[in-house]
Length: 341
Image (cartoon, rainbow, N blue to C red):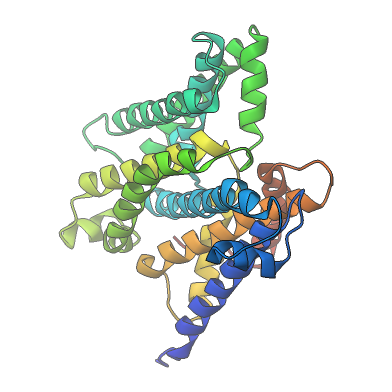
């Protein structure tokens, strides 16, 4: 067997890091106020800049860029964990009912509790995502066989269907809830300040830690339940850790930016293709950080593109991701067989 060249993983990491740096500079410089890269670097270094530049950079662009990186990485990580847990290449974080739970909680907050501020309904969205995931996990582990990938997926589909119906019932009878739901469901990084980003960082950090720590167990699960159990893995605890990680990552991200589709579904496949080309194989110790970096770049790139293609208005990042992700996923399926999870 030919050993992979050692420079390939290093080259892959260097290219991804360079792309993310370029995207961050573009995100800080592009928008309603165009700021040259030199002025951006001056503002970041604390040196004197032009009027409004420092305020725009630190009050608007830095929180927006940080949110794009953090939320994108969270969605990429949760998608990779979800596909490994269910051994389903078409699984995404929404299969656990996270997005449906957050959406239902938001329409309840706006329509029943009368909460109209973003900081008010963020916590309802997070609580709804957590509650839906707990219900899915409890339903999925019912029966003598305990939790299995198929039972978790079926429970997630059932809970999502019920919550989607309840959400439609509320928004059709309450115009205020409908307006709030329409704004949130488009998926956007705009109008978020540093305090919002700081509020969700502990949840994202804990979720990322749980996801990365589960990488060796996910490698064992890829070999099948029987083999994983024979290797000493406690399947119930592994799946519970994965569900908690997905809930924290997706719930916190979706609560703020809305249900951005395709990132958790498409990015893990791209990460597997890159890992295979670099000779790393299907090792989740590499797939998880690769998925996080690729997803952060995709969401940030979509947000940048949305600012410049329809000036003076902005197109939400969720719409751009859907336009990019749909055809890309179809092309991926047509060109190559989906990688085994």
